Length: 454
Image (cartoon, one colour):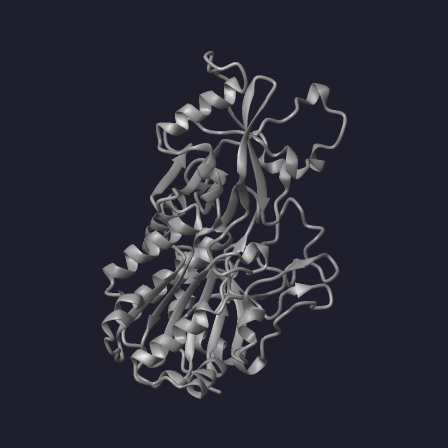
């Protein structure tokens, strides 16, 4: 294994990495919510010949080896599937990532007044350090659904438009630790121009008048899904441009690489699947999270259109499948060495990181991958000249983390966590190494071709 992946991608080979990462940065800049990721995935999939499962079901069109299918769940999760030459009952090679990221969400009644300002009330989503979200340029992305079903897309704070912000207390008046900011303190400054025609709520009324021009009323926030995210684009990082700083690497870097890999997979021996799901940051719950039965239902419907469905065959398929739970891991941080075991944790520019288990402390909540499966993976990746590292996430008693691995392992399939090392994880701006991004994409492509043994 090379000590640094930039050795592998020196000279002209570096253009492969730069080209791939240029497209990734554009994706990361444009897709800051789950819905935006799904729109992107559908567009790219249809270019490559993928067809909507819903359309196929309505037409009762039969599927055959080589056919490509996608299925969308509530515009916030997607299944992409390529039918293999072998019966689906023999198993599927699955790469699964999540497309939700830590953020702030607007409350159902977000607008109020305070001290000559109209304010916007938020509720944070996922594990954040609250102080990191103050004094930052912020944007709103989302959708408002009217009572008649009309959808109004919302993007405010990007490009040259005004941004939003959460104020912070000046150091001259600070005596307490501002790292102890409460969730109820994360309120956006919406504006401080008054509607002089009003006697009460003048500042709120002015903002409501602006929203009315966009066909949005105050009551419409109840049926809205608006996320507050960092404003601005993903950018190269470092004097050598070796890294990418952007919002949502966790886990859109694994979502993008897995998506690109399946879009380039043609006529596989065994069926392959890419899962992009929601709600991982809050426990994978809900109808669009991995705990939902949507994935399982899609497998049943696809097997049915292939003329291969019965309950036992589907159960055998799920049990025999292999999965890479493609989620990021913590990279050793040169500024904060203490929480890490530098000999066993992930490093930048060492390739995709495999965590045999996640969980916390005494492996609580972990999926612990079988060595037979790992040995097969090693053989597959070595043949494809993929650089990878075997890692954990921090010192044993330091903490830990979870992914969707344990959920898929419930079916009895082989599952291991595999993803990109990240600095600043869960911060508004996260950092990854370009070569790790590219090597992760190469890993997923090789995995899609791996034989299934069980």
